[in-house]
Picture 1: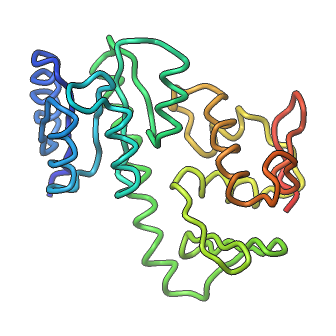
Picture 2 (picture 1 turned 90 degrees about the vertical axis):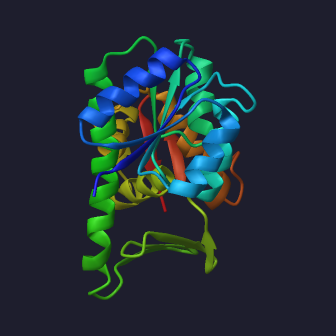
Length: 234
């Protein structure tokens, strides 16, 4: 079965170009030109990946991304005409997985799509194997990571982490006591082909601190190594 991609783009020429090329690549493509229609189609078809323009009529892409991220973990690649760091940070804060600035090459877009779909496939392939063995867990005081189930608990209460938040926390926890630079975290959690900068790491660390620290303004679990990166102290 072909993997399904939802393209959300109000510029007709670009939308049709993307649809034509991705269909030729073997994907099943659905398109929308407004934010409202994008929500309807995403809920109806449950695509494997969403290409989402920021500047859209009715609902902008950032709002669409924020709403969808509360409902599903589908990879979202945001598209924008502006190479603006603020746009990138806000896009990541509302839950985008990757970011492309127009104009972009179709080859680069295809590589980003394949990377996101590959990441999701790897996660799904791990789940059946994990359920056949006893749960592997990491415990740090009141914080517990159930690795097989990809779940995190604080005081035995489940935490709702986004996929990248979980992957970042797990990587930090598995390297407890080691200073990890932002570049190392980007490469090991997001992948070498991710185009976002180190600000991406800072944003996700801030989110994690808000969820796992008693006082996020004075963290004791994920500690900043000034000028170097972050250390997980547990």
